[in-house]
Amino acid sequence: MSTSQTEHLDAGSVPARDDATGRQPQAPARKPPRRERKSRSGTAIRAAILFLLISILFVGMWQMATSAEGGSGLAPTPGETWQRLLDVLADPFYVAGPNSVGIFWHLLASLQRVVIGFGLAAVVAIPLGFILGTSTALRWAVDPFVQILRPVSPLAWLPLGLALLSDAEATALFVIFMSALWPILLNTIDGVRGVNPLYLDLARTVEAGRITVVRRILLPAALPSMITGLRMSLSTAWLVIIAAEMLVGGRGMGYFVWNEWNKLNIPSILVAILLIGVVGLVLDRAVTALQKVVPNA
Image 1 (cartoon, rainbow, N blue to C red):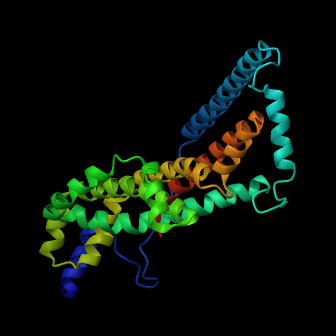
Image 2 (image 1 turned 180 degrees about the vertical axis):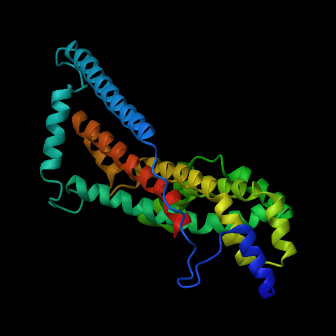
């Protein structure tokens, strides 16, 4: 591609680069008007108050429901659950045996499995999504396989993984990979297919290379859909690993929940559910932050 054509593509797609730094000039950040900032602050305060009111109402209903049982049921009171939460968090790092460990080590084991399985799925699904999104014939050829495998429950892969891999840890990663693959793949394909054809026609006119097309056109356009796929995939992976760990055993939040159920320690199960939900929220926010970081990288 000639120099003039490259300059034409750059001028038509992105702002000109600064000669001294080689970077794109950043537009000055526009501060929101004072009235808009005040409105956002007021909305945040109202949301926080509503959250507290809903939480108090929920705890009150929980207390009434468990108090009506007179202590004869398995359902713990909010006070018992709070006390168990304090006990669990008081010494989260203890190690008394291979599987008798603090809650930190269970969380760490589950997170490691999810991050590895999710990362492998993203490495496979994102490039494959770009390929299938730009090739109609190949997409039509692969689509029957995707539609057959996608509805299969992730836990249905567990016996197959144990039979083929003969290793509980590798099987857990395999199940995470299979559960995380499809949301990323399908959303990446949809994002690539949603690119305005005029941009691709312009790129062909100026004989832009494939890497330039992907970096300047396809990736920015498909990024919102990819982020959606990554969020769905990560939440699914975090959900599935809890169930998988109940079956494969060893350290992990799923093993912790199953072990506490065998002891009929219901407050510990509620504490684990709370921690699993909080970690899931943090993971979701971390993936969402990519949408702000990647375009500026």
